[in-house]
Length: 554
View 1 (cartoon, rainbow, N blue to C red):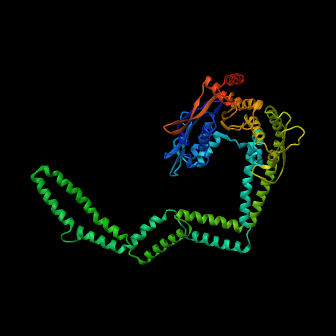
View 2: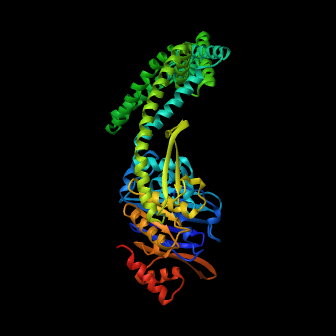
View 3: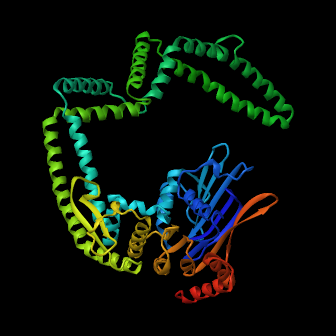
């Protein structure tokens, strides 16, 4: 659940911290006080589009951050690890988003920089937002199908069908790649044969390039290397004043010095060690020179091989391993094309198997949906009657889809008749937003047990209802809040009275600047706030507020 929300330089908020508890958290306040700004901050934290106009006037940037905790974070570990993000510590998850006037916006998850897509992926698992027009999503058949499947617990079967759909798409793409005209087919064969033959003929070794470059450099400089080797031999021993004869004279001098002074022993020892190394050097130089070939033919072979490797790299990959991999893939494609008929037969057989499986799994999915529809209708009707639709009728029409998609073989239509004697009509034909919002609230109440998202946010979803229905709306909110943390903005006193925690958002002017702040109300402050919502701070309004609070279930 969300335990803390912070905002700085966000819209009319200078600096605000709001702590939320489990159950039903209500936000109220005068129109324009900034209630929806709080909800907007949550929208930003679940990856929705940002507008630089949200930055408080005079500030260079604004930030919003939220701290979540609870059992839902257990499922986050794999997502965080896969995206290279820091794990949750002390059982808490921190989301943060920073907007700058320059447009360089940043996102953080547990302090790690994250992409907006990562933030949205994590946010969707934590928060379910329902704005004043959220009921419009009920007009979309895809959303209606989602609700039915969530109610029936059909996610595993639906996921299996979606996997089969993806497999079918892959097989059809592979089949389409093989079904080409003969001229194109011949060109593809010629190209693949040339590519695979050229790479295979080179008999490449993944690590040969470095050694080849070294051999080529040695062969290209063979004459100079022999010249330098002979020069070194001359300096060592083959000239009258070369090093070894002069070093022998030096040794005799040091021996004479040693005879006169024992302290010179170390000097003689060092000379002996040096002479041992110098005496080995001429033989080593001769062996080195013997290994050098000043052979133009050999040089030509090395240059030819080097040029071949460079040519292959220009065509097929930046490195020899990449060229080898290209050749292997070309050979695989060639074999596939050469065996086109057999491959087409294999693909057709695989497609037939997938189609049979889709029919089986899709049929099971349809059957489970049809089995669940009466239960969903019954549960929704019970909730709708409590919301003032005592003579209403709700139904779900399921039929075969013209073009089956990843969600199954079905098309769906929710139908509703708000008044007795009227035939059920598609929800899209209902004009009243108040009716639509109550249908949405009824379905959310039904789905509360199945929905695994820990935080549900309702932004004035209770608009256009009142009277006794408002009391029922408050009770529905409390029912949902038994299984979820709920944050709700409301203008209805009866809904506000149902809150486990009641916050008021208010504006004040300080030093000529408007500041919006959020405060948790105590018992007496709740009475005054609900009285304000009822119409004023009269004794009658306050008494009515106390009655509403007293009537709310504990």
